[in-house]
Image (cartoon, rainbow, N blue to C red):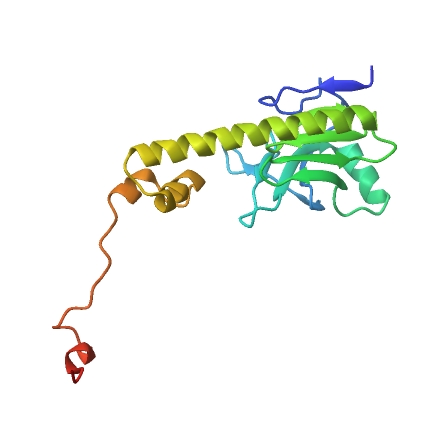
Length: 196
């Protein structure tokens, strides 16, 4: 069988595919290796990838745990980034092409974790559509749950949408900090000098 389904919560391990050493790289720049600080302050390869969303609604950046041989083959073929075939901004899901020589050429990444890998374009495309729509539905449900919670707390739609998008917390929206106001005793008293 050409496909392997990988648990979203589990990181890619040698048991899933490829027995070579793993490296954590940015999908946007394969030359960049990502490390975390270990117990003794040394740099170690993280146990799982991560997704960094963009603020402007575009897809953002994936940092993935991949086989070093796959990354080397892509770089030898002249790629400096992992070729992204498709991505969904709010769905935090992307479809990448590892090239013709890789086992399981197409990988679907969801929230920074490898969700599915396949050598078949048709299977990868179908699974990408399923996963992107499922993640988008989860994100929409979470947004509307936060929106309804804010509306039930008495906020107007404007503030409730800020709470639902995570711009401000519900607590800060309910108890706003008073803005600094200029008093008559301040250095600028031009308001008192208005001639009418």
